[in-house]
Length: 131
Image 1 (cartoon, rainbow, N blue to C red):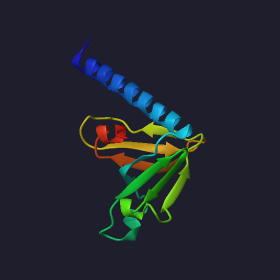
Image 2 (image 1 turned 180 degrees about the vertical axis):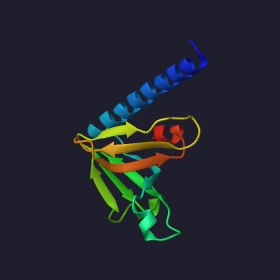
Image 3 (image 1 turned 30 degrees about the vertical axis):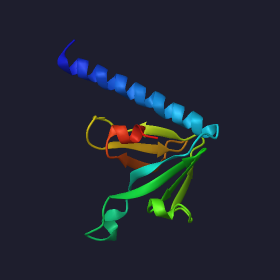
């Protein structure tokens, strides 16, 4: 096996492990398991239209409860109305390649028809795996 082939095999194994972890987290959430909470960056496709100093990625605080994903400006806003709510039932998670162990881990949540609903980023793969 060449070095490139071996690296791809390792990357594929890591992706399969990540997929298994995401599926298990979704099963826990659907059974009413503990909430998953944490910071993720949310892609803002309209950022360029909002002015020269706008950012494409906005840090938000997310709460996954059951099949509902809610996001807020910050953790202290959780007691108030969320900025957005997404029903994840029948949605899919699509990982953007290439996945690296360092650097941002980017993924999309798509509806059953494949339309992107949210594009999110964790600072690294380990953050995306954290509960």
